[in-house]
Image 1 (cartoon, rainbow, N blue to C red):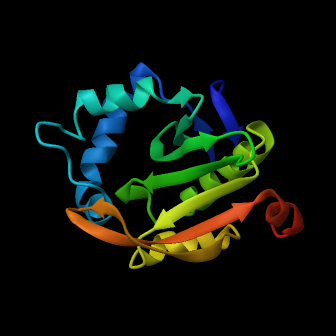
Image 2: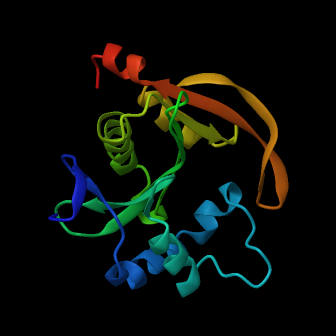
Length: 187
């Protein structure tokens, strides 16, 4: 856990490293059918489950506008998912978008709830942001339940927001601000 950015009781967040290549891609491949309804179709000629996709993720894991964290179990160093903080904006906005996925073998175990709590702490405490937004397809009940557990509130519906699985999909816009986390004593 020496590379951990944030450590929880069962999982920690850390940046990916080249040695994660095989394990990361194996988890992505094992979760392909599970994730298909919620992901964009790959561009022609690209393979989201291949080495180039891993290399792209690795290259953009830490920049001014993005952070990509692997969610790793504490007891056995297994990758269970990913949390992305993207479009990090400074100035008067101080905002980012949060995306995440859990590997199919690890769904329903609470790992992502803990990981997103760590990510929220990181973006408010370490990045000193004011607001985070998650956009979710309304039929993704598990993701909506997860975000609700973290105290996010529904702000509205963005119609035909993203092209997911080949279709322009509506997305619910969920957000959380620093004040709401400070006021929430259940965290």
